[in-house]
Image (tube, rainbow, N blue to C red; front, side):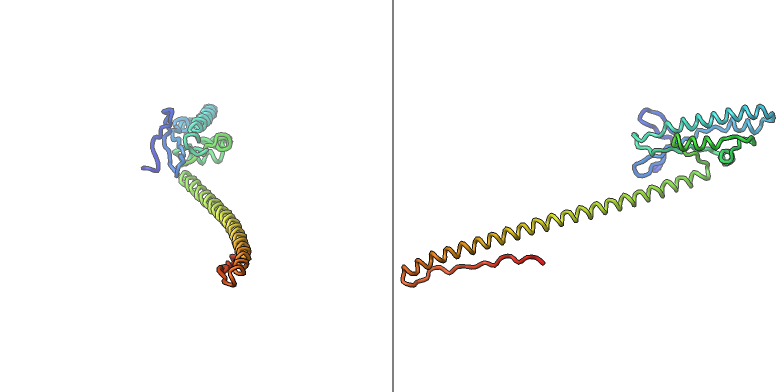
Length: 219
């Protein structure tokens, strides 16, 4: 139940028949497609009337596509596409082979119109699951790709921090070396003063200089 909702209400109060929740995204699904005009085509015997009903059916289909497209609302968390559910495998198959109720018709253009211009994917009871699986696999691949990008970013950050650490460590070693040199040089000068004092005090040496070693360079 927490993975879908029937119906789903948008912020403006408008309802879509169903919504599937995938991570932080929503796939809106319209299922209000009417079979009435299609059934009329099947029942009609007069060819001229059949063709008239076929035009009405095509217009119904186009209207339903445009209605479904209104549920694509990325600003409210939807995917950039929606599913339009047709509850009949027969109609779905007819659309694919450009045939409506036994009449040859250019309905495949409407499927392309739905997908390319309105980002609406027309699905049937059988194809719905296949399309949904395709979407899920695509999202998993995207997640893996994003995870890989994050890992690479973390490695780059780590490398940057290590380089900064090494730079500061070298500066510290250099500063310590300078400090030790200064210390030793100062003690040498102080030893000269001690020598003068020794001569004045008849050879009694008072100070023994403490020599420090410089830090060794890391290998």
